[in-house]
Image 1 (cartoon, rainbow over the protein chains, first blue to last red):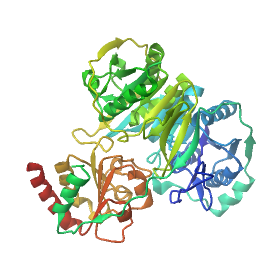
Image 2 (image 1 turned 30 degrees about the horizontal axis):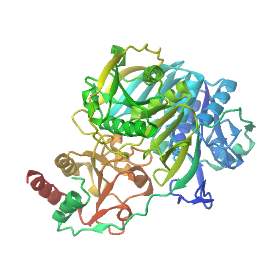
Image 3 (image 1 turned 90 degrees about the vertical axis):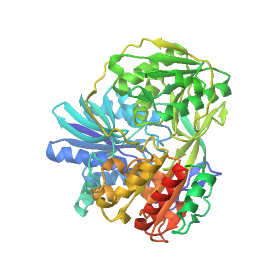
Image 4 (image 1 turned 45 degrees about the vertical axis):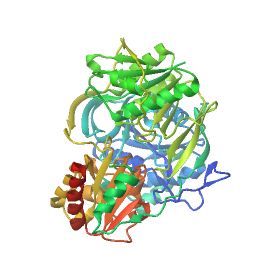
Length: 248
Length: 318
């Protein structure tokens, strides 16, 4: 099985979010970038397939050279090789078109991605990719088994989950559950050393216009301070929720 | 050049978010000087939609659509959008719609802006405000394609009545061949789901053990709320994974979020930032959650929550 794992290079969850250039650019100053947490779940599932059922695992990112450390980290976790499509990722549809080209050229059977990235939270690239290459698609996937070309997947639905049967070729938008958080891997020294020798191929993008573009950013209005209520006076809380916040 | 709104339903009944997207779509149509068409798939009755401004409703029914299937739904929505000549398509943000929207975007070759929190600030260029960075920022996004898909973030625009005398037409859609088949649905019935809840009552490790969740459930019951929990609680197996809210769990965009015995790790806050009013009950006055909260009680949950239940019961009866 040939597996492609799509990796988004995103600011660490704890990063302070600031904007520069008159609020038109995300301020990367002092920001630590990581593998998108949802992609990390999918990457770990890919490693499981590689180890238990035999598979090759390629990781791919659409981004400029600054994303390479993130791809190297994925290689250190155990991916076999990496591809970087040399283009700044601006818009979901154009990113999906680049990934579609990578899938067509690489002949992958299974494409694993996270259900969304934690920077732009678009939740669109895996689905768009599946449509562009006419692969089956399961989003919000919390369990995945592959037997030959037959696939059983479970996806989260409102208030529960749904078991689906499908087949390869397939695109998955994964999340926690496809592996558990405790099973996520931290690269060890051997992995890091080996990752340096693994191929990281840079390919040029195909022509694809952006369907959307960000013109400016805003930060949420500053939050007022918390109104503290005495523990012996829950009546006051009820009164505030009813009369001031109007939520009960 | 109509605005097409998909009113999402489950088991024949509209979700509350359906009324929100219809309200939103109606307003966008006004901005564009255009009309609004609402499409429903396998909904029992469409009359409720007139209350929110749906002048024309297109009802699609077919036995094979009774269970959600992303590819089939995307194909049906494309057929309706084509038939109605829709240039703007307004969708919600339920799990199912998030599954469909990207497929529809490709089918229509449309730019798709998800997580939209306000009406377009401009229709030329077509500009919408979206949540980004896990609710720590917003991006103003221009959709430059001819056809545009807007995914309205849950509970961001609100439900606005705008009664019209609408009409409903049926639409015969051809059903796409789908490579994905539903085998089994496991759903907790009779409970408010986190996604649809106006109020969420959530508890963390401060509750000390799963045996103490009775009072959380009772509080949720009094408020008509859904119950939720922090990540450590679901990791410990005290509560099901489906209740875990936070960055890697479920996002919450309720009107009221009550956090009991949750310290407020940044990953947790990322999942609940979109909630409008936050109440924190915690013994530790230094808990980071107090910085994110609107109202707080420094106190022991085992003393405060039973009192709160008792007083709320009295309040509800009054």
